[in-house]
Length: 311
Image: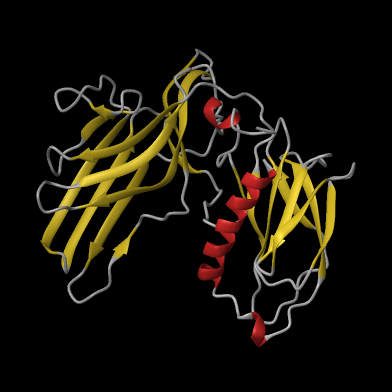
């Protein structure tokens, strides 16, 4: 496990060096520093005996240890050349890995304790993963898409239930002058989409489970627009943000008192991306997990939970 983790961290460090544009060590003498990390769970409680690794670009061998009863792991790193990163895991929790500090200007390594969160594994369930590429059969018309089946509804596909209605509008003159927009509308009063509030980044400290463990009960919007374009003489623009993640809820049913008794939830990994294309009417791309159990609000795919801990 240690050798595998070190190999992964080394790769992350090399990519991180390129991304952050770190200085050559000859340009400046990098100081030694005590790195102090507090590992807590998603309720803010200290996590004891969490496996901890710390490294910097000038100390790629890293340090290995475990947190104490207060969730603290503290080690001295030599000639700290930023960024400083780490990996933290324990059985029963989702692993967190990535940068804990990136230098800005002449900033020195902080002397305060840096907090890292390990989300608890609470209720992992079998979830369906889909990597979707939708080719639009028609423009300027709302077309139903079935999130469970992963296809347009009949007669355009094999879907049965229109969980979302998707409308594409295309104005394409050339690749130097075009506008392509996709409007997604969720059917039903209590259904919708919302940001998970947790950005995905290639280097930032991040949990193996991106969304919260349980889908929110409120805060859903009924519509979402994805777009891409380039006005004549202008710059390319797009709504697709690689750091975005979203949670959705569909097929919501309520009892006589208006309380929700069932719904299907899931989460979208990364952006909902679009392209007008020249050979067809346009495409839309997205990846998501679907919880098939309408009585469960869990957003924890069992396949992700089973990869955590000490394996």
